Length: 93
Image (cartoon, rainbow, N blue to C red; front, side, top):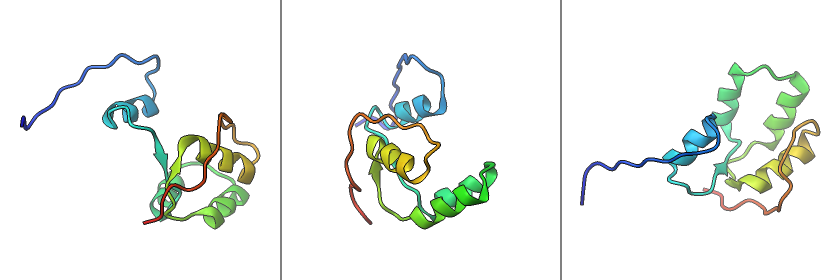
């Protein structure tokens, strides 16, 4: 077994999610809105009503991307999800 691994990929975008996709080795994205995520959101300008909605929704539930975006659209109406399909929470720790 090699202690070091290299991978080269060409992606259509140069955004943060693309970098995370490479680091996740192409595995599907997973999302959580837990206390750690809420702390990171303190650096983002959000209205108090939106912050309160997210605070009420927060849990350690792990979501697939489409399900998370669908739930986000339902809870925060001004968000823009990709409504391809929906699934519920995948697992709870």
